[in-house]
Length: 423
Image (cartoon, rainbow, N blue to C red; front, side, top):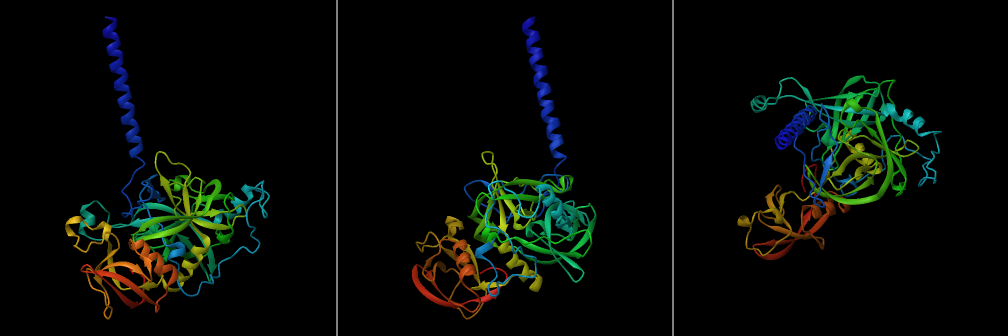
């Protein structure tokens, strides 16, 4: 009898445990919403680098994008813009981490809060297919990120955020630190660096942040991540940490293509919704734009921000032209390593860049060619090619490509043109 009682008790405990899982699952599902536009992948160290875009109802973690940075900055004039720049920034912290400007961290945070905003991505059905998939004909919020007011000029206020925060938006709203919301206009985007600029009407209840010099940031410096983790429910959140590495190079695969990127690494807690938010030093200077993190069960405290010096160069081009122009060969390409075996030719080449399309006339490049070197630098993939072009070249420069054509190697000279898309 006692044995039957024990069996019955065990059965009841199991049912309670199952019900708890069901309740927890229902609770978790209440924090989910339809995902924002598909984001590119980061196959780095076999962990997931996630963007920090929050779903409108909570924490929707999606694979995200950051890009370019020092390897894809605009060529030509790189003198910056009319944004406020700190002229008394110290190189590194004192040991006690005290600000040179504020009496307390709270004072600094309160002073900078009016420069930090939420960015709401609203989307509507664009065609019959969208309607059949349940999208509304009316613009509805699909994701929330963060942004930073960096300039007030002639009645307008300019905001920098991540491109993946506003990608696919039919309309954009900005949520101010005092919970007021205003309409925003898209000024320009650069998918390769994952940077976008928005514009709103200037207001007395916002301020422009001061840019710090990210080249002076040192490992161990105190930093603070400001933004809206998990959406507006936790708006105006601040987390603290240090710079874990001031020049961390990783490989990122954005909607504009793969490229090696140099970022600031920090252990300040960065969560979904922080994308586009500010990483500031102890004096409140902007040293980076929070953009992505590594999400894996065995990983904690590894987040990344786009350095402020790189951000300044890109936003100048976006305000002037709405896009960033870069040198281009004039081809569409695929990594040889990504071509299925059954479609590979008998060229004997296992790495390099396969020319899938020739987009301009007058160059000695054919569809099916495989680029294996540029100016003597080995090319194993499209990241190698982009990194060399965007870092060292500008439109009008001449390059020498080593290509494999039908199993034979030859060299061709190409004059670079200007493009805002692929090389």
